[in-house]
Length: 471
Length: 88
Image (cartoon, rainbow over the protein chains, first blue to last red):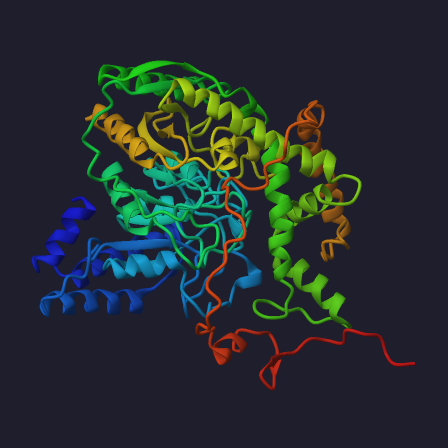
């Protein structure tokens, strides 16, 4: 059943939102002990919200286009009075005093918040192993990671706990777990979805987006949450585009670039799925040719200077003063350092150190400044590629889901998981990961469709065509 | 660097991070070597500057709710340990 069908049945009074949410809660209670997709299940709040949807239907009101749809939110999105931990000890007991805009918009459309999902601490990671509360397992194989950092949201949808979830994508944190868990994951254009109430990691890169089982469901979720928000000064001052209506329009005549830099270095079985996807689009009428974004090869290095630099600044706020953990000290500096030492995990400390170094006097220009210039090169190379192509195509992740523990000792090998997803964040462009078959190990492979800024309608259209080619 | 970042790291962490971060910086040498001094830096992907709201009062967060989340509060304010040294 699609989200639209669920909402239609609830709006028509054929199904009750309460019955639907109770099904989600029962599944989670039964199976999430083994997977750990959720940090916090909002049992009472979810039932109350569902009852409210049913009451409105009974009263003749229309609860909205997501009536009765159960949604999971990554645990770095503020939920008033409900724990928002970022999977960190430093925020373990924090209850935000306000709601994120994403939550207000979903609730206004009749969606029911079911719980908060696990992530790599402060969204720093590619496997959800950096959570202070333990890793999430991949529903396709519990010995494997679900990807990250939004691994809990991807796993919650892949396991069928909820039909919809949201994550945040700073360097691939929606698309890579979507690929590894075999679901659809969308990173919209930078600024397209309000980040008010999203705990900041790297502010010039962070973007919220949906996970769903199908392109159509993801498109509907995107429509509900996208559009200008006066509470987010980096929000694009334009209304949300319509994307659902065009999903059936096909790719006839669209110029699609199979991009060298987004397949090179991927495992052979992953490359084979991307090539099949390219042929499928060609068969559907697209004009497929080779494309190149040469500076994308520098994306990883630029990202791992820019993102930690911004994080070192953003995470300065966790100082034991206004909220979160405090470890007492003799004076205020002792209190700061003791609090942060006890509250942050290893990866967060590493990135704060790296970012502090990249921004420090004497190294600023060589590292941070140089990374920002590389960012310009990548944007220019994307522009050149989009002069000849409407969309670009590549792999989402170089591999299928890897084993839990395989990359934790060597951060650099972990960082390489994001090599195909990072360039879109640096450029601020939208991209979507669509499940496209499996690898030699039987695990899901994701294919990535990349589009120029604000071109989500075209991106969703091509993604829907890809999805149809599988059926 | 740890002192600048207000992080109290153990000897073991310092040793481990030094090697791990060295590897990341070594990887970053590929961009350090690029001759691109004439390329303007990009700090932000949107061409937005000075986004301001109307200068009109709006409701702020509830003070009690905010202070209830603080590790220590007193008389409607956040409470912190000693900031200055003892008076001579």
